[in-house]
Amino acid sequence: MILWRNVVTVLACAPLLLAASARAQEPGQQQSAQHPGRSVVMSKCFQCHTDAMFRDQRQDRRGWEAAIHRMIGRGGLWSSEEIKLMADYLSSDFGPNSKPVTPSR
View (cartoon, helix red, strand yellow):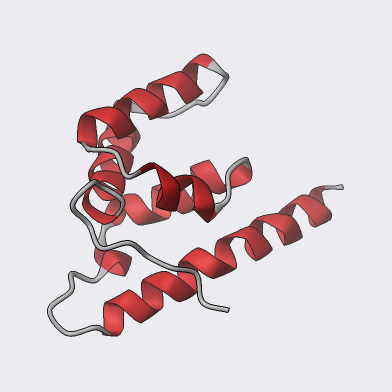
């Protein structure tokens, strides 16, 4: 059961990783792989969510922080530092003014 959950998690992460890799190669774009919050989001959020949740919402930092706190109300366990890192990353890469990431086919 745990093996299948890990396989599903890896498969769910693949489109986001490919899209982030493509964005990192574009000139003038900040490399999202360098953001420390990215690894926290990948390890904490992809246990339940797919990359579509992040691509579709496009919230500012305050909106992402509120979403994270809603997940805490549903059982998520994160430190205040992890919350800050996740909100910073999500608002910079998936905020209202960020360039939309389309999954590669």
